[in-house]
View (tube, one colour):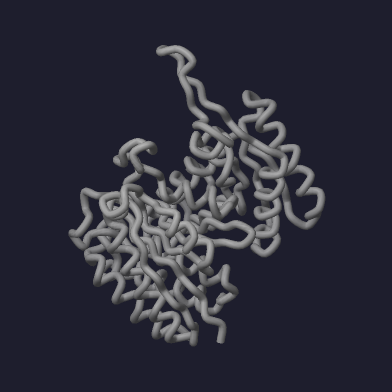
Length: 352
């Protein structure tokens, strides 16, 4: 039996609650399917800032590199002090340091829950290390600057290698899905050079996958079509910012951000992370929906090759969501966090 090492980073706000919930479900899955998982907890966020002067330490980064996976809770990075005072975004740091170039964000409709389409089942494959994000576009210094007091500029970074590897990830995923379609999302009518390069690489990869349907769509049109007819999409291939925005839209259309699993992947590392934020206004009240991070754990299990366990966790989530007494209030239920978690674990024990 292979023992896998999991680093748990609870984070801020509701982070400790949902990481504890996800750990409980993972522990139940491990017992059910005979998995060996050794967990280690370390501090990030405000707790780490108070203890060591930084929201993420080199020791945590080294531990993440050594782990087979990371369970990352949400962080309140918008409330952190400046970077010079230790206020680093742990999520962004891990994406850079572990080269987590693919952010995989599924969105699907669930039986018993309201959504714009009963047959919505798509994945947004978001490039994770480039784009307009100011903390990952430059070798030195930030990607935003002000040449004069009344002018602010931002640099968008798009590389051929970065575009090609995220396109390869999208086509590999689409080839294994029933829909077998990749839609490249862009704004090349305005961003002709940077999105032109992105599409150039996407088209080159598409040529190597003749059995996967390929098309392209402007990002504003894609937003409209997600609302109007989301079932037309299979895998949406996007640059960083477009994927960030469209994945939140898709998740809300599918039922809510509380249901939005997310996995950050590189060649050697994976980080399971809820798609939503730290929600400090409901922290400690037992009101947070734990499903997003639990589904992220299922994605991590699948990435480890434990597909039977991953399917069982997802099926258990689906069974609990079908009952209003077992789902949280944000998705029309009456359950608190603990009740929802207990229901998922019970259903996990019932799966065949």
